[in-house]
Amino acid sequence: MKAAALAPGFSWQSVKDEQKRVIAHAIHVGLFGKEMVQAFKDIVIALATSGLNVIVDDVSFGKKEVNVWRESLKNFNVLWVGMVAPVEVLEQREKDRGDRKIGSAKWQAGYVHFIVW
Image (cartoon, rainbow, N blue to C red; front, side, top):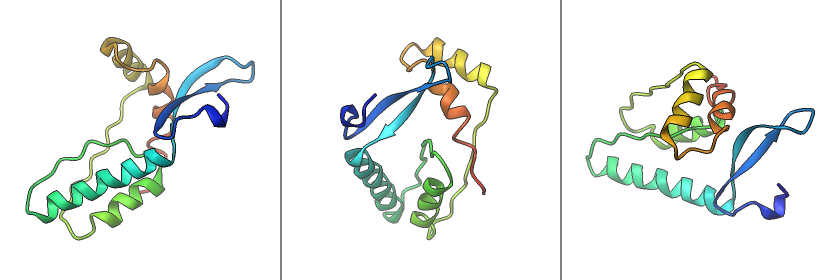
């Protein structure tokens, strides 16, 4: 997919192997998508500041994104939970749900947990 064709919000990019076969799908976050991600964090902070307990279910793609969450929530008592599963299980869940982009679980499994806590 050409850079010009990528959505300003969120869109899928094909990940190809050396033979140019699509092997997975990656998420592209455009400028508007980044603004939405920040707005989500702002809402979570506003809810927590008002005294509400909040559960956030988010996929952070790397240490930088986790660190932004950590900095944003540094004044709150937070329990961090990371979920992992074998790629085969994730791929089966992806198929079973019927509303997932096939190949996204494979990409996320190889990317999401490559962070340093």
